[in-house]
Amino acid sequence: MVRSLFDDKSDKMSVKGEAVQGKYGYWAGADSKMNIEGGLAAKNDFGDGKKLDLYISSKLLKPKTVEAEAVFSSGKLNASLRAPGASSSATGPLEGSMTYGITDGFKVAGAFSLDPSKTDLGTLKSSSALGAQYTAPDYTISATTEGFGAVNRATLSSKLGDKDVAVAASMNGMGENLALATGVRASVGNGVSLKAGLATSGDVDVELSRKFYHHIGVKLGAKANLNSPSTLPKFGAQISLEAKP
Image (cartoon, rainbow, N blue to C red; front, side, top):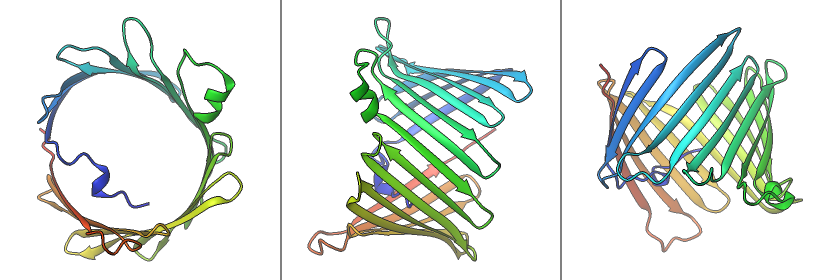
């Protein structure tokens, strides 16, 4: 569906630098709130389509925790394990995900988030998710369930000419709190792209974006709720600069 400008932390400015040497990569970045971070990546290719990528990153000033991730890929199988808050005294919560391609157009996926200090079945049940996706030449159908059926979602996306259209439905349990949403993405000429979305909650999102000189991106967005006409719409703007040697 449409991702709004208002989902981003647009009150910050940031800069990031990267370097690659052989199978290793390095990066460092800082933002206007004086958060300075750096990281290291190591890519390993074992042949026959088997790859293992390792990532580690941390704040560079008085680091308290590090973020570590391992990503394995082998043909139809992709799996990752991430520790977003590891320290010298504890691994912190663990996040894992996996996708497996059963056929060329059909794949299944699973994910979990688990705190090693809380290993009871109830915690794992509430923090796990399963999903499936089928892709045909003209459309894609996907479905997910979280918490073993506590929250269920389904999405149908397709192309109508040069427009991308999607319809999504979500509900709790067996049909409670049913919600629908639809979105469209299209080119409106002069290099401008339009994204718009409407939900049964009354939320309306509109976003216009354009790239200038292949390196500068500009986005303008507006958001309103039709069920609250007394609430003023929100507006947002974003400028991004991409510079590569």
